[in-house]
Image: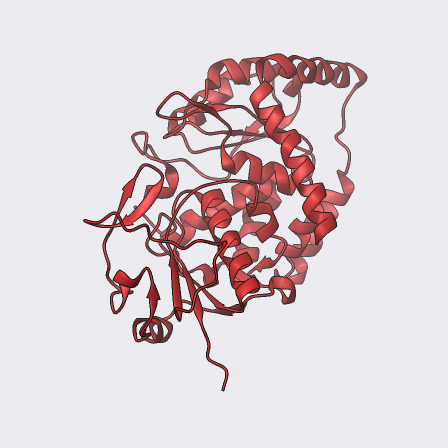
Length: 355
């Protein structure tokens, strides 16, 4: 009789961090013949993974939805890693120390060593942390019909010919005024989508991009007081999460995507994981179409028609020259973002070949 062993993944952080952690667990579960269970209710997502995503046949690992029945099954398993979680799967407390999540009141890390094999029936992984593996995970899933329809209903009014900007400015900060002023010449006369987690940026951007034909947004951003939008849990959680996914797809479907480096609370220069995830999808339009494949046929047909008709941006010779000059300038003032985007392109090429 085959005994089923499990890996319980409880990711934290923003969307990119969560997808990276799920990718880590998927890879290990597939390699070790464990069934993967994803519980996103303890982190910022605050909803069930299966409401938004469905595994494709290429997912490789066995999969169980996080349900009351699944929780009961895992709670009854005799051997768990970490062992201190035996019988406590539903309600153990956690704390964060630096970037690591620990069992509250202890130094026990809520995770496992991916280089090891384990005899325990259940492994628990509850961590955060970003990277480039998120884009790999999106090759193995699609959106549910409810999610795909909701995304297309939000982004179809944008049409197909627009540029896009992503600005992170809550827990991580962008010098957004300088950034927007520097890219504004490249966007003059263009329809531009702005996606941001900052209420202030959303208010100020139209004035800083006054020569654009239009500055568009998908939804009003609440004032979170500097809290990351993924931890702002007021209102309808599904609508908030759907808005994040719609922003991601809309950024990825733009003709040209702009983003800049950020600084975290310690002043360290970084690039937002969400920006890189959007850039990764921007480079893989086929992945977007698979993600949206469960949407209603009429919505998908409208999406395909608008993007096929606008495959190339409608630019004058002068606009093309100005955009080229702005791109050259970014080599100096936006070096970190361009370096990370280049690294991302190499990662996509390498993992596509492996896949």
